[in-house]
Amino acid sequence: MTTELWIDIAHPTPERLQGLGLHPLIIDDILKGGQRTKIERYESGVFFVFYALSYHGRSKQKLHSVPIYLFVTTTQVMTIHHGELEVIGDARQRWDAMNGLQSVSVAGLLHVVLDTIVDSYFPMLDHIGDLVETLETEMLVGAQAHQLREIVHLKRMLLTIRRQIAPAREALNALLRGDLLVLDAAAFTHMQDVYDHVLRIVDAIDLHRDLLATVLDVHLSVQSNRLNQVMKVLTMASIILMVNSLVAGIYGMNFSVMPELQWSWGYPFALAVMGVASAGLLWFFRRQGWWGEE
Image 1: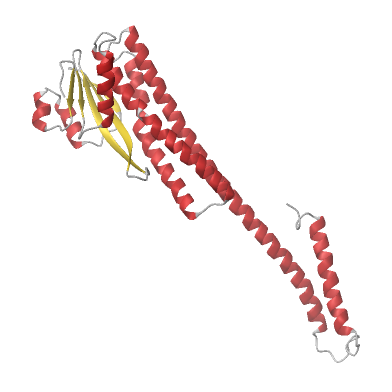
Image 2 (image 1 turned 60 degrees about the vertical axis):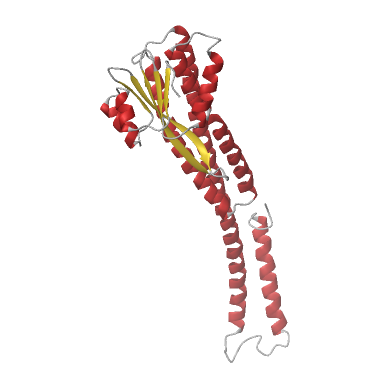
């Protein structure tokens, strides 16, 4: 779609980009891709690289990122991307709805496009936040292998999102300083609002990452505590068996002269000694709080 103020190219080709008079470095960035979120000043205008993020697949577990390239001059805003994007369509609807309400300007159009891109991140982060809360509750009840895999997957996804969004802070900050574009008071206020949204998104990403790390730490602590409990029970059982083995070993020695060798109550006496010793140890363990106490 093309207007006098807004040029949108969904399927860029070298010939089309050269026809727009773009710098060769910009054309190389657009065609090769893989650029980080950034803002650069050229002689003829300002070049932006932002990313449209969305979920890919029915499970909403795969992140799909598409770069959006913006080139802003004093008279035009160019948006260039590979394939049709829903976020660009939303920006178009917002811009068409606003044309009759305020004066048309490059700064106003740039705000609409950037604000629409940034606002599209919030539903995705809200969904991730719901997943984090659900995992936090489930992990406290009892962790399963698939839950641990999901936590690792979410941490990687948040890391990818942060890598795409965090540099937008520096880009918008440079824009607000006035080093790249001259913004009037209204445009400055609008761009400041977009900058604030980016800060909120980055803070939310860091919060979700910290919560996931905390959930993993809690899981490891619970597992360690359970292991300690098991080892404590096994240690107490080993001590009781060692005492009983001591009694059985003493009475199992084959000496010809033993005080209880010919005693008719020798066997019950040995069992009684083992039982009393075991009971005494259990009483001692309970008194120390090592057994029978939460």
